[in-house]
Length: 105
Length: 119
Image (tube, rainbow over all chains, first blue to last red; front, top):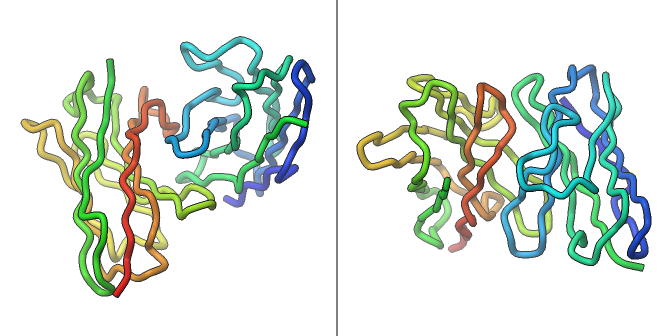
């Protein structure tokens, strides 16, 4: 299943509400996860099953969506949130989106 | 505390076979609702799932299935991956990661091991 993330690059200021999008090529039944990857590090799980917050992840991160369209929201951007974010579907095998690079304005 | 760590040769020549080891702690392959997977990421690019092992069942990326073999050594807390006919396009960071609760998301990751294929 093809996963398309947008935008590929996002610039935002500290304190901004940030929204990242992920679109699946077909209905993935909420089997969607979001990961944060900082430069030189392994990915870190943020959200699973579309809207469940992984243990230890700050509550400013949230996930929503259904069917083919999903969103990761950061309610108030912090400097440590600068990273690339990937979505992953696991409804049929598993595939990842191409990523959204989030930088500070 | 769950930890995973990958180990590999670092560099190999085209057509050779890559052998990778994932050594883990704080979790057990004897647990029925847990799997371990291998993924890779070329520098500056996206993530690609390669293979997973759940109990005694193995799963492979259909596009790479003919080149991959995943296995486990339960007593050593290790999962192994063999990847044949390596080419420069296979140059990437290779990760092992845990699947949990029968789902195919990855909740714990190793730091990754860089593999370069070059003559």
